[in-house]
Amino acid sequence: MRHTLNRWQAGLALSLALAAPVAQVSADEAMSAENLSAETLSKEALAAEEAQAALQARIDAADDATRADIEALRERQAELRQLTAYNRELAPRLDQQASTLDEREAALDAFGDTREALPGMLRDLVERLRQWIEADLPFLKKERLARVDSLEAQLADGEVSHAEALDRVLAAWRRELDYGRELDAWRGLVDVASMQARANDAPTDSSQAGADESLSREVDFLRIGRAGLYYLTPDGREGGVWKAAAGEWQPLNGAERAELDKGLRIARDQRAPELLTLPISQAVSDAPRMSTSSTAVNQRSGKEGDA
Image 1 (cartoon, helix red, strand yellow):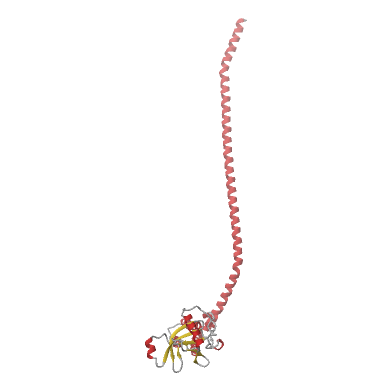
Image 2: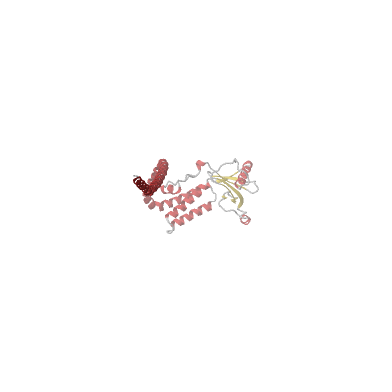
């Protein structure tokens, strides 16, 4: 029996000895599996975090794009409001321009008839200009009539276009208009015998004065527009005013000659402007008046008024 017990003990010991390595292997496998599971979970967590970060980045980008689109929309709306306001402001101007274009088209339609009548109208204007100068105060008469002669020669010249001829005729009329707004002083000759002034002469030198001393006298002329034409001798002792109604010079008294001397110095920028007390050559209502009622002339000259 003791022998049987020993054999059982020996078998148990052998079984325990064989079971120990197996238990060790199972523990190692369990630990390895646990480590593998933790690593897998860590990788999955990291992947989830990366996916979440990528999703958040896309959300942020979408928010930025949305905000940019909203800002662009607001800018477009502001531009639209500005354009709408500008269009409202521009509408009356466009209407006015359209009306102007209509008027110009109508004028162009009528221009064909005017073109045919233009040569005769120009000749009539030049003839009226000559009549105007002949009836006007006798100042710079030679120069002014020479301008008319030149115009007549140009109208007879077939090489001068109608447009160029019209420009020159209107320029001559405008020059006559300017005379009515000028204060002018110059030196010329007066016919002593008849007291008729050669006011149209250019400034003379002493040799010219000496040659004509027996018939004329050198004087200073003053012209105040078309209201007054005067002369004063260099010594101030004699002076006259042209009276258009009588067609002659009439003498000035001492006080009037003093006023005339002031006027001469004012015209030569030697004295400050001031009011002058002088008799007039003709009333404005008595002055010759221009008559240039031609439609073509009014359109081209900007509708110049009377002198």
